[in-house]
Length: 337
Image (cartoon, helix red, strand yellow):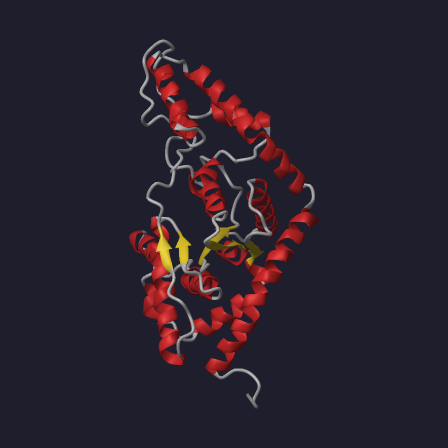
C-alpha cells in the first residue's frame, strides 16, 4: 500500500497547554494511527532559538514537549519522532537552499514584514531594527525541515500556509536548477480544528499569557480553572454556553451527548462556581493517567533521549543518503565522483 508522508513540526518555545492538545496534539496522534500514512513528528528546537535566548528555557521546553507527546499516546515505534538538532543534514540542506533562495521571497514573509511594519509605525531610524537573520531566513530552515524528508502533507494553521508555499517555491527552484529532487509539499488546514479560549476569553496562546498548561499539578490546575473569566450572571439565571470559555473547554473533551446535557445545565442556571468546580474535576480525571505518565517521563530525561534517539536513527537513515545525492547534484563531494 502506498503511504502518504505527513510531517509535523513542533516548536519548542514553551510548555504545551490545553489548546495545543485539543487543537493539534490529539488529532495528530489519532491521524498517525492510520495504515495509509507515514508520520514524521519533530521537535523544532533550532526554530526555538529565534524566539528564545534563554538556554534553560529551551532545554525545559524540549523536555516538556517530548514528554507531552509521548504521554499523550504518540508511539515512537510507529512514527518517526525526532529532534531537529539531531539531524545535521537539515542544517546543511538549509545552507544549500539559502544559496538559491531569492531575498525578495524572504522579504515577503509575514513575520519579517510585521517586524518592519512595527518599526515604521514607531518611527524607528532603521526599518530592520531588532530583526535578526534567524527571523528573516527561518522560512528556509522550515523548507529544509519539510523537503529533507519529502513531506507530502503538512498540517498547519492558516497563518503558516505561506511557509509551505515558500517551501514549494524553493523546492521548485532547486528542481529547475539541478533536476527533479524534491516532492511538492501541500499545506493541510483542518477547518474543524478546535480553537480553545484561554483564561481571558481570547485564543489560548503563550503570547497572550492566558494558557492553562496541559499537565499542570492539581493545585495550580484548580486555581487556573477558577481564574477563567465569566460574566456576572447569578446562580439560577439561565446562561448561554455559546462564547463561554468554560463550555468551550469542556466541549473539546466531550461528545455531543455530554455537551447537550451541559447545555441543559446552563439553561437551568448553573452557577459559575459550580461549573468551574465541575470542569476542574472532569478534566483532572480525564488527564490524570496522562499527567502521571508525563511526570514519570519528566523525571527520567534519559528515557526521552532514548525515544528521540530511535527517531533520529530512522530519520537519518533517510536524510543521510538523500543529502549525499543532493551534494552530488550541486557539485559538492568526492572529486572523483
